[in-house]
Length: 128
Image (cartoon, rainbow, N blue to C red; front, side, top):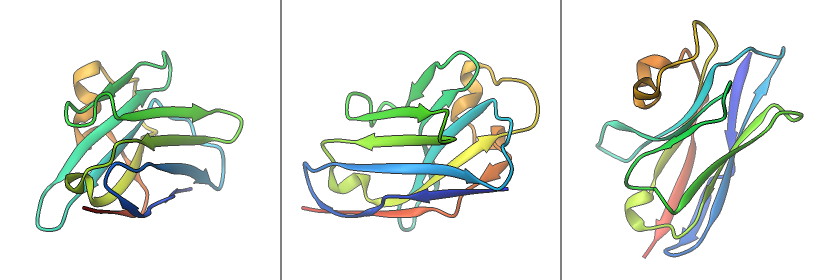
């Protein structure tokens, strides 16, 4: 089973992109899916996550009001709609899934250790 993140690219500041994260292979059971990003020379940061069972979504303060997570159960896909992109949003974006264990509590959603399956990342470049 693999996670495939796609949709990255080059966009001007203020523009939009939609990232997708699809699971290939067998259907996986998941309790949460998250998006993280890593800018050059920086640590990987939390962007947002959706708790699968109740649909609750958590966002990093830096993206609230600009980014939106959604899911398509039929397509086994999670999306990250990014609007109002800023140069500081430029990073490699990763999706991750929690396939083992119970549904995470709210505070765990932003912790990388919550997730056991990671995609390869997709690059988002924002020009000023």
